[in-house]
Length: 316
Image (cartoon, rainbow, N blue to C red; front, side, top):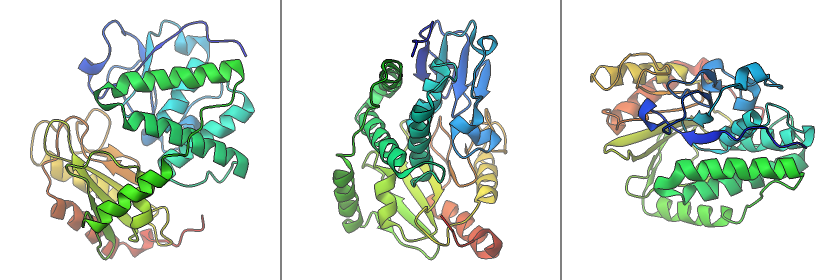
């Protein structure tokens, strides 16, 4: 297929000052980068993966004059959407199915219900390839993400197989087993707590093989100090909640009660507060959360106790 007419700058930014110099007009995907002239963000609009939040064809009127495309978090779901922008939405059907499979594995940690087993395998391999290379990027994560997006783009344009790597899965499982043996995974009645402070990043898929509770709370280090939280439903639990949105709202209000840098009590783009989707969300991007671990757990446990209607047996 024909390559795109213009090469756009690809970047990761959660603050306006993080946008590359000279990138004056840009789109945002899989997150709401401040200052974007157009945003496709399924965290706001509610689709399962970000590709579902984007038009199948992106007209020139949406892209003319753009210097770049950014996201707030470098991962496989964001990469698939960046590639869609670079191709103006014109993705070959077979490639789109693999990108959808990879994105679903990234965001939901299981097979996309609408793709074949073969495309799921290819998507799982693409997700493994992207995740492994981002995990070793360190401070160069934004540049590494841009390189990966253009690598996948070039494979699509040439008609080559998309990158594939599942070689790190066993190593990730072994690392999580060691964390568990060291007491880093704490069991609760409804919430499993994973303490990764001082440990760096760990593949989320591997973590969930050791979590039996319906909900996981992952605690890590924020780069500027303090705690960073990720909350998610357990995709392997038959009693996984269908929504944790009331918890997200409650935690954002608690964070706002501590004052600046939080700007609003609502978990919405630009609030410098908690944000995400109804089944997975996290603490603020740009500073460490002021909430302690027990405080977060109490919010989650209280909701899961008083709202049994939110706990439904999963059929997928």
